[in-house]
Image (cartoon, rainbow, N blue to C red):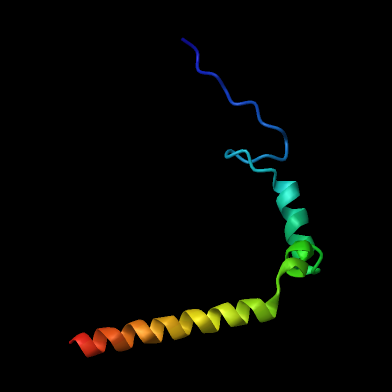
Length: 69
């Protein structure tokens, strides 16, 4: 029984990654062009508010644990 050899495209690695595509994405990321749509959807004030709430909740839980001990 003969082993099947994987048919790869010229720019693909053994794992099937397109090296040219990755290089292009990395270059775009360095230039600030890649992923801008995600940055536009992020509300920084909302993130800060939620982080603050989470920190307050964490402090409350720690205080409750300390009171029980």
